[in-house]
Image 1 (cartoon, rainbow, N blue to C red):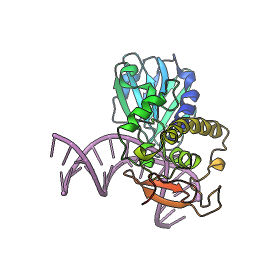
Image 2: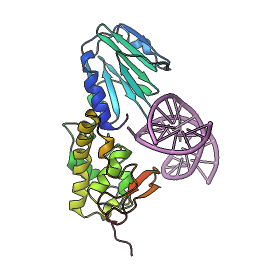
Image 3: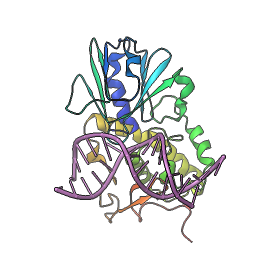
Image 4: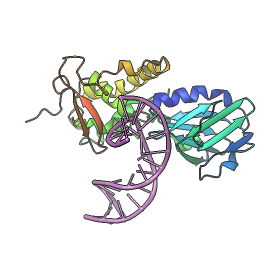
Length: 246
DNA sequence: ATTCATGTTGTGAT
DNA sequence: TATCACAACATGAA
């Protein structure tokens, strides 16, 4: 579920609850869920992997983490972390992290950092990357402060699409290559969104969870890499390492 | 049956 | 004080 494009789908599916009043609330969250009862939803928004239910004065932030899920107008056996009932349906979240955001969302979030947002600002991303020249690109793409919404699948696919080795240093990328990484982080995220909506995302993976390079036919490398130590799939022949090994 | 993974936060050690 | 490594969370797919 949980990369940025999937949260956009959630936001679109939940849009029918905008303007609706919470009639019933329940769930096993430790938060004071009662706070939402009787309150009207001002907006349903998202920032990166955060799904935001905005009320007047505060918002509920839902993060699906690795295993989280949701159901609209449906239930399952597992106990919901939070269940919101409206006159026109229900919104259920399972195995997720909840948090209240106090005050206006525009003060809590910089929408320019969300790769899925209309406000996305590639120049700002470049400026942030300039401050971490020693970071590996496989870590930089997962940095939610730079690329909010990018997750491990998008990371792997983008690096293959731009033919950059995941262990490359941010500061060693030629400026045009860095520009392509920033551009493709957004472009592929929207491609991901379209494929996911059509239920054909998985079949379009080029390297993620794959064993052979679609470009040269060679065996893909698979290793846990970077300070985040996440699964990384790449082709040592087709993806260029910056700086080049000595 | 067992392992592992689209992710983040908090804790305790260094 | 700051940084780091790891545990915890929790569920379905392979």
